[in-house]
Length: 91
Image (cartoon, rainbow, N blue to C red; front, side, top):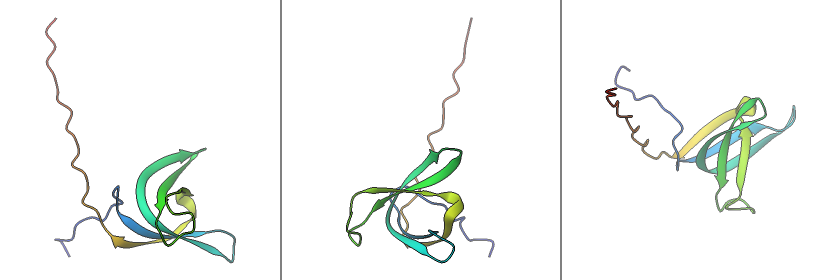
């Protein structure tokens, strides 16, 4: 178990997100992860709907606190973090 990579949501990955709609209903969103956004005080996922939706290409915003599950259909490689160069200041 020590060799497992930590799973993280990556831009461009294809996911099936199940989220809560009402107490008894869920919404299934299948599409491509575009990142996070702020929705009021809450963080949210932005998903570009794939062709299984009538509104393919539209962006759906899903507040993180209503996400019930995320199925990974196709995981994109994470982008390498750009290291900020530390410059020297001579004054």
